[in-house]
Amino acid sequence: MYVANEARYDTMKYKRCGKSGILLPRISLGLWQNFGGSNVFENSRRMVLGAFDLGITHFDLANNYGPPAGSAEETFGQILEKDLRPYRDELIISSKAGYYMWPGPYGEWGSKKNLLASLDQSLQRMKLDYVDIFYHHRPDPDTPIEETMDALATAVRQGKALYVGISNYKAQDAKTAIETLKKMGVHCLIHQPSYSMFNRWVEDGLLDVLEETGVGAIAFSPLAQGLLTTKYFSGIPEDSRAGGPSVFLKPESVTPEKVEKAKRLNEIAKLRGQSLPQLALAWILRQEQMTSVIIGASRLEQIEENVRALDHLEFTPEELAQIDSILNG
Ligand SMILES: NC(=O)c1ccc[n+]([C@@H]2O[C@H](COP(=O)([O-])OP(=O)(O)OC[C@H]3O[C@@H](n4cnc5c(N)ncnc54)[C@H](OP(=O)(O)O)[C@@H]3O)[C@@H](O)[C@H]2O)c1
Image (cartoon, rainbow, N blue to C red):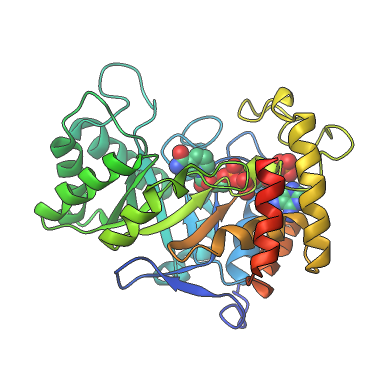
């Protein structure tokens, strides 16, 4: 029987999510890749339990994570059933709807029909009564924002989600969504954008909107899917995301320019006594609005390494300037 590490809350750092009662671990774990039905269950289980033992209380899922779509939620449901059920009240579990999930006109985007049906499916797959956070996964240009936000508000009123969030919304759309939810009496807890050293769009307005509205931020793909590690320094290893069956990081995305920048960033990391992924995570968490980062992993050792980023989160102005000059070069 799994018994959680008694010291799990001793070293992890937690931060308040915007203006809310919820504290999130500065490092959260996402189950997008490597937790599906086509992956080895015992490896997925080892990562989830190992993360929880390190004080990672937040696990991020979505209806379509796998492959096949839905199977990451099933994997998580099995781990809950086997090991984590006694710890349910120590966990923040999120799911999302909005990307393609089932055929026909109701299987994706932002209708109330799609969101509420998808949430029911997610709860069944994870064997949960409620999720802690339910997100709209991507903005829908064709559905009135009032309808999509009404779906999120309804999930809260039904008790199927404690909090709600939005993901991949640009600054102005995020503002509209947050204000629309507010009129319905529901606070938007969190926004989940992509953000990394190689992808800085959130700095251009979104973080300001979140600050003004008291909404937390959690960055996804903070290591640019592995590009901000040393693994691609001399080619593409077979056991990497770019070298494996995943369609989300193609070998052609591992460009010489990116690898060169990563090598130069790695020199700064070494001077700080960090590894490159540790530097990349600390750099995101320097932003006051950033509640947490959601890392992905293919093995527990990566999570253990990444969590140690929290040992050195401060940057000197000189370090930040050097990093900017590499990234802008
Ligand atoms: N809302 C959205 O639209 C959206 C979209 C994408 C992701 N997400 C969320 O964000 C989470 C993280 O996304 P991501 O997996 O792209 O994040 P990421 O942290 O940028 O990349 C994770 C990958 O980097 C490699 N890696 C991690 N730590 C490493 C280390 N210390 N040393 C060497 N390699 C390391 C591993 O790849 P290898 O397989 O190469 O080992 C790992 O699977 C997802 O699980 C999901 O929850 C949300």
